[in-house]
Image (cartoon, rainbow, N blue to C red; front, side):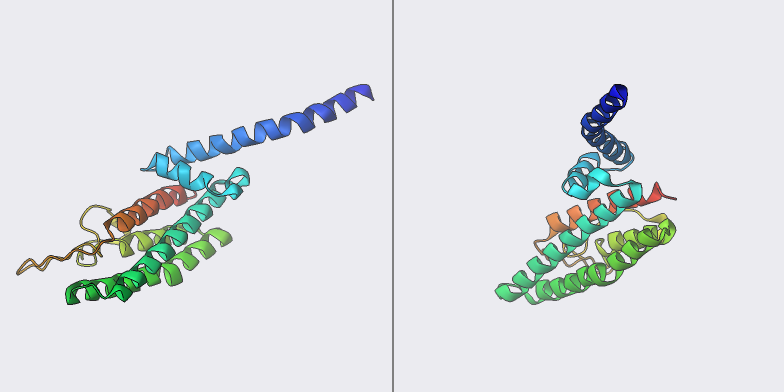
Length: 194
């Protein structure tokens, strides 16, 4: 009886000590397999649910982080459009950006979340890739979901025409880069489920 009591007490005392270590180890192991280790760890640890999550749960958390970032960027776009200090080309580009981020929030993310919830990582991967494509320069027509590349220019920053080059700056480069990096991390995590 005394030994059972000691075992129970030992178990109660050591479980809280072991669990965070196991959680951090899963996060670190998972993030080491992504292109942006620090961003991955920071993003996942920002959500308390990561302490109990498996790899699928970590993928869902990353999608949630992407959603938050996309909503924040969408809000920033609205503020820039309301400012009234834009050239017509900048306003047109921002409206296009707003539509792209709206696509991420309303179509890509919900589809990705649902695919992860029902255990369809291939469809989830395609959803995250679509999110990354939306965060990529819309004038780059060579991007395909199966051979996704994050290189090139980003939409909402500048566009180029093949005949003549016209350039305008929209102050969203930082947000687009962050979204692109988050998508790269999310794709890597989802691919661990394949």
